Length: 429
Image 1 (cartoon, rainbow, N blue to C red):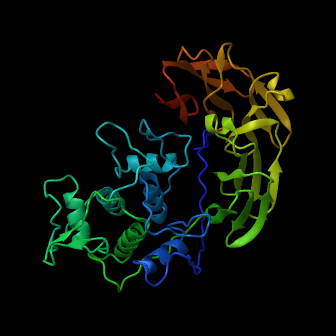
Image 2: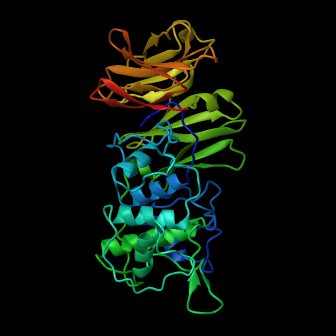
């Protein structure tokens, strides 16, 4: 889903159709699960950091795990219109992963209805998600011959998932501790699952699935992960965030340099192009509206990097056919005079302006319809004491605006179109 409010998340992605050697300075022969880490990195299933490190002991948060799971299983994440959780937003990079996982039954959220996307995933949460995703939402039949940890209660919600994973030898045991040198052991189920543990678990689970085995052995290996051309594009920033190197399929294809620190992000991926957004650090509007001040297009066929010119502060959305994009105009620009939402036709260099209803400010999302004929946008009253918000549909041919909903509270995350007419949106209370 292409949205206006984006959190800048930069991944160091090293991809290859025929796995290339990947090394990290903080992973060596003494690092537990080194082979799994290497395989996962070579197949694009787990990323390093912009400084080149892997950080094997760092935790994995809940949405990062979903991304690894769904990409490792080559699941199409862009077809789901399933609702998000109240604390997950369509504006974020993780939205299609959360939608897809929720629709597939991989995640259900916490009793209070939240998902807590940035929270470190603990071991039993990670095991449950992975077991369900690798087994079509079920726990396979198994022979429970493996000794259960002494710190696990068989009546806990996670017991069957953990018991199966241990019985099928799908979880590494490096982190466990023996009980006074006896036969029992502590598993520490509530502890955060580290990056090296996730790499080992997902490697073993994929090997089991690809070989149609009932339990993991070192004699089986997973099949390679196939990536789309857009997934081979990565951004690597220098230490002071003034330069970014753009890599496509292991080849350096360009770069950008600025005098002051900037945020660089992959703003949108399509089968033909990757859009890269650039935002200066310290730009307060970035936190509020969340889009780049500059937009570059990388042509995946020619590796040509070109800038899309516009007179605006924040790019909001790219149309499905990539011929138009929307943004919020600079206050001082000529396009701000007729309205703050601007649509530019890239091919014809034509601008369309849409006024916000009197008293309202455009503080939400702009979203193109799948047929490129309409946009939807969210607006809120400028009076901070009045939290009323509205969602509008604009006909791009006539300019007519139609109010489709009126709600109380701080809304605005427009999530999707329903049959090119209705809009699904979220409450951001």
